[in-house]
Image (cartoon, rainbow, N blue to C red; front, side):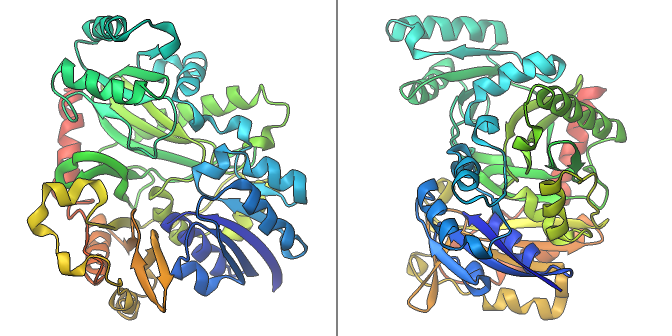
Length: 469
């Protein structure tokens, strides 16, 4: 068996799933070198070398790569921050180690305005109406307010407010969800506008899916569609988060989608990819997951909500554990430019995140539900891990915002642990996932109870049918 070394730049549970997929390789013996945001217990246990870089700054990551370059065959970068800050450009130029992620120039999630302008040029039929508001174009708050209200007149108030720069899925405000009056909308707008450019887009009515594909620069190896739930609370209520959970159907599309919906989103993604890369001097600059598109399926067809330039968190966790193709071979396919498809098991997966009481505003909305005696206590994963005796590979437990400290594991501020259930149906996978999160103890953690619920899926099916009636 060939021995290889892989550098993984890690933020949370998404990268723990990458580490897991690499360490489970049947074709390679993988030595893992992990540059981590914290002492993630999952990564520490599996890494040949592990270093903590709390801010994931690219220079420190490069120094770690330089120290170990004699043992490294390639690198994987999961989080958006180092990708946007040029991790690939710098690691490759300083060490010669090939890196799997887009180069800085093509990390288009850095600007929602750039995305909209690109999609308007390439696929205008899938682009919502939008208007860009730049602080340098206005003199005073009243002038800004008049311009915003004028645009709201055109949109009949059905608007989405988005800061131009990435905010980890937390800066977006939606009419009818986050605000119900123009005054509330404008207050949200100004809270972002004080820092820079803001977009106001038309609100799109439909059902959302996540599209991801591994890319070698020449081909898109398309992965099954997934559904992410960003809202903090059950029934998709509350503020946006980084994602509270996600699911995948045994098919390669979701229960509320038709085969035509899937064909349409594939056509839009391929059109964007082909026209975008045709202009690039070297299309390998976008190897990795350059198109992680959020589609809204509507009466008129798919519309693009946004794009990210890296694997989805949590959505890639729904895929990696059920790859039939060895993940190391997938990586080499991306590096060598010969990746045309990736085989995935025809099963369902459900991922549920357990998070601290401070996350998503939970403690403020449900103060009586917080077990204050458990705050800042160690998190115990033993019972969740023990479920593998019952379910085997049909359960995975991935620590995220969690660190080893004095021989125990403690929750940090973000999504603490993700539990993936695998099943022949969504219902089976969901039951495993929920049993896993229920087995996690300590830390005053909580989770949404309705990720991939039958009622929630049926609601999505009926909503889309009514829109199209």
